[in-house]
Length: 120
Image 1 (cartoon, one colour):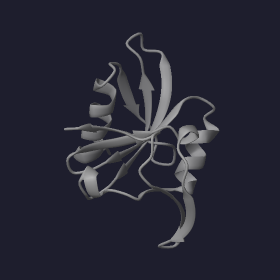
Image 2: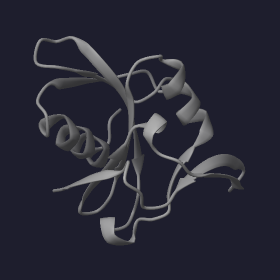
Image 3: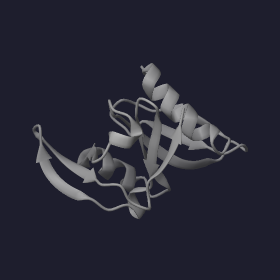
Image 4: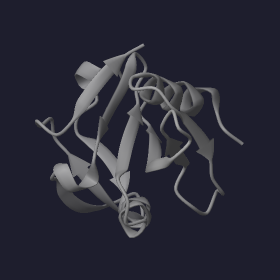
């Protein structure tokens, strides 16, 4: 089941360039992204971030999700759904720190050139 916040984030991202998306199995990454011709162009993971864009950093994502994205061997994107918009980046274009946090290995990202944002 897709949450309203997750749906708004993926819709905002896809609407910024056109195309469509499809929700995937809960054990997979979150979404497939298609262009206007219905061709698969990327996979996406949406991470809910309960803050405004200006105070969202450092961003974080579980390494297990990052690994699934990279294993797809096609363009991938991580989208952080904030209260006032989205922050997104491609895993191969951003850099961060790896830490053990709340029982899970996480990647943390500070503000950087490879991260873009779109306000709602």
